[in-house]
Length: 267
Image 1: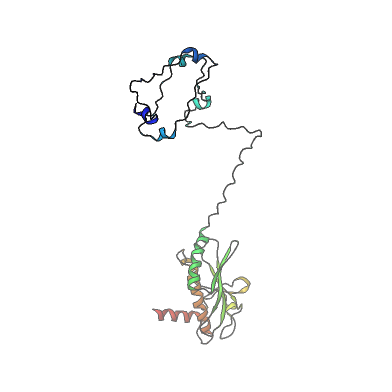
Image 2: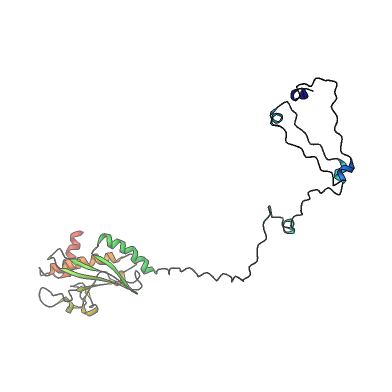
């Protein structure tokens, strides 16, 4: 009643009873010529009024549910692919088939693996760092299977320059290298003659002449050589020999005597 008084100001008859809405007869529902009543939207005042109860939808009458003329929204069945695939969580479109055949992947090229260095090459790389730090005038020269430490050494006595070469054999460090004086090729003696003519002698600390007749210096005894000795040690022996040779040109002593005297002085 309060609702009627709100929207109908002159409404005061409290004895009027509101009509009850009854369900439509079956004839009306099944008659296609009867237009269905369309609900108009509620006024804004009714929607914004908190005192108005919200219209609740009632379930459909049994007549409508059992009437075959009323179409009910039917869900389409899922595709067979989705039903049979247990791992499929959501619908995925079928994979299209190509009209052309894709060739298989060709075998991948094998990665190039660097050949492992032999014992000599690994050893020379280690000694190269030592020689570069302690005797930078000498460098490691490698071409094919040949390898050598070469460089110019100037003596403190007399200031004479010599070109030294340590020729490294294939089985180094187990095999002893050779030490040559490449330049000057001919080394004169103070009393006449040359070191080259002496060949292998203890007094000169030389072995048989090297390539082109150059002087070969004795540094270690062949029977005492082992892998603990290095090319750096051979070069030091060569530098010592050059200083002794320069001293022999100023005195009557031979190279062996001068080196022995220096060894005793160090002891």
